[in-house]
Length: 178
Image 1 (cartoon, rainbow, N blue to C red):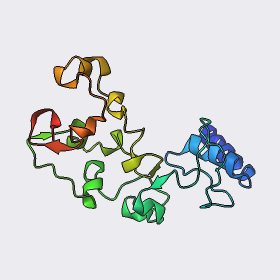
Image 2 (image 1 turned 180 degrees about the vertical axis):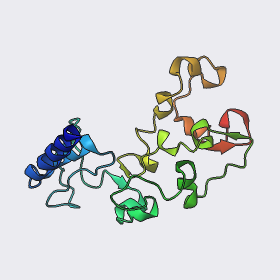
Image 3 (image 1 turned 90 degrees about the vertical axis):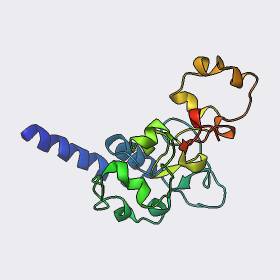
Image 4 (image 1 turned 90 degrees about the horizontal axis):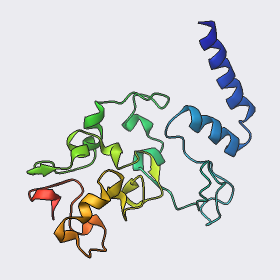
């Protein structure tokens, strides 16, 4: 029990010691907690770069898109309290409380069917369209094998995003075709 008290005490001390420096505070908090927003700096909204977050990718303010409730600091829309990671409903039912996603189709994308929206989307913020976890171009290959997909004759010479032909959520056509 004393070990946990010591760990908790050191964690609090680390956060308090770095509380004046947004970049240091971000590094500490994002190490301990998921979903910590990147630090904001003076000149926000004027196209000035933010401080470089861990990972070394320099982002410009405005590059991040925020989920509406998260941006409005309405954490209770999804979480039981702002400091809690407990959801107001089961995780697989959370997104469809607000987002109208048709799942009454013959074919439903696996992550959506299992309520795993976060397999593709970040629930807080993202620098990518639709709050995707990565750039849409080639994003599907995070899970789907690029070489196996390339062997399908219909994909020969295709240079467009997958969503030009496939819907990412559900379809009445096989392979989630549009």
